Image (cartoon, rainbow, N blue to C red):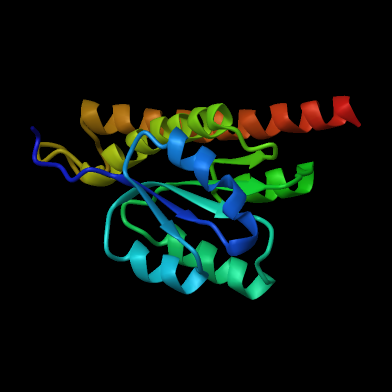
Length: 180
């Protein structure tokens, strides 16, 4: 055992979406913490460590949505944010990615779809949390403008993650245009 705390999945499931609970519970491979209101999620989010946060795109007023997004985005380490929607279009998907979210899951919500999305989001989270636990610092032997090999490697990893995100947006746009 490494002594690191285990990360959990934090999900907001408003009453209008309770029908997804069984599939979500079956798909969760980590401890799942379910909240039924924005206020509860904001309060609970400060009490644990979450690798993945699952948020609905429907049933929230605009001010609730942005308050919730802000609270989740400020968690340290920052979790992968999955958004689920009854239906989605490119505008929602691109907006979630542009705001720093990981992906959008659309209905029908099945155990397999949730499981695949949660695993992908967790895989995306772990490199981010590694960078947060091991911040980039200059080598003591070098000047502040020089870096060591580990720092250079982390910078390349971060740059590659940003490039992958841009690539995902471009692929999504092409898929959207092909379907339209």
